[in-house]
Length: 113
Length: 111
Image (tube, rainbow over all chains, first blue to last red; front, side, top):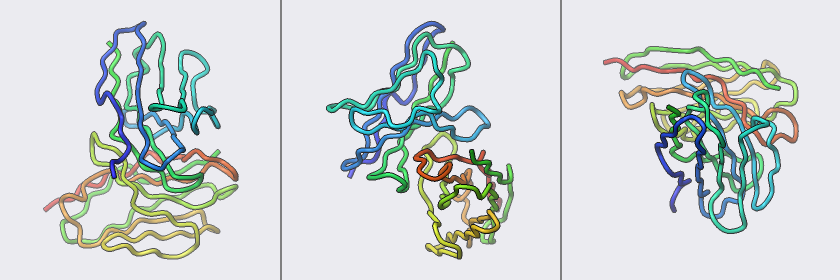
């Protein structure tokens, strides 16, 4: 049973470019969460999605960031016009239902030059 | 929202026992998670306490006191591979789906 998959594992972008991060949840999991981890900081919640629906995006910056979880395919976290401050590790987690333990993917390490 | 506090760093000797504490605000809280995170890797689930008391799982045990807003993770018979960050996390209020994490405790196990 494959775990949570994320790709790419490492992503380098120049300021102003777009970053697309992908997450495939564990088989049988329909709940996806995105977290960001800055150096020396804890994991910070960004957004919670179920298939085709954004349930809670209270942790997402209002501008440049968006997320989706289409009926078919992986969940996507999209960052437009990246800035140096977006450099971080972005983790995706999935769970079979609400308020269960969340299983994390290996993360995407975004570096903005 | 929740404030979750835990020590930044700890050092312990191989074969010993170490206790990592976590305190949190009690309002709207429902259960507490512990995750292990090795440098550059994903957090991996260790335990989830909903009720007060101690839960044992092999070399790892986790304790929760909801009235005191306090939890600890106990690691026995420490091994070098236990060197990692240990993250305490809880749901941010009733009906919330987002986990609020502490900054993590970096444990170094020395020979």
